[in-house]
Length: 216
Image (tube, rainbow, N blue to C red; front, side):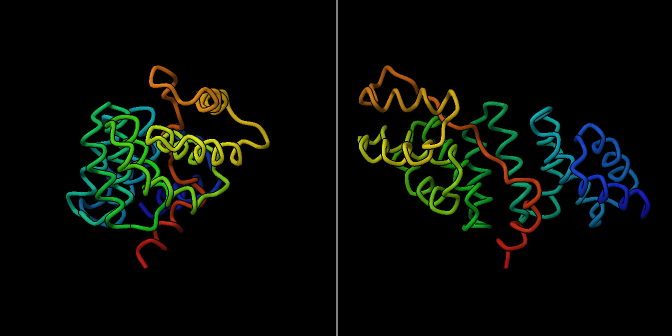
């Protein structure tokens, strides 16, 4: 099992495709003692790497981690993303609320929860402080700024929304971001576009360090 763990660590460090890593993680999950660090790590990574391909299965893996470690903010965040992809938006919001309560300075959790509040649950005013926090912490992330601009406009703050988005896309924006700009430029009519960034995951190369920092 030690060799398998080393192979997994090497594959993760090299950034191999999840399809190459998931089978190794599945073998580790079967071989490790239930509840052990190796078992928890394998299930956590199975959830993280597989969530966009199979959110239902990822939610099962995340739940197994949370059964043993209810204070695992990363597992709550993966649960939130999985439930969001499954369109269980209220459940997703509750999961992100738990993740953010455990790691209140994590901008990715703040963004994803704020985005759910605004777009999925029609609570843009509740979204504003979360999206402001995320935008301040990740000022170079245009997708996060777009989510903030969208919520601002829905709360009647169109001028501020345009300023935030214009700064974020000054070097060019995605098709969704440009559609959002046109909607803002038209005065943010209620019948217009309601489209911003997807929920954002932490960059993989920073995931472990950020989780560690959040718990210090």
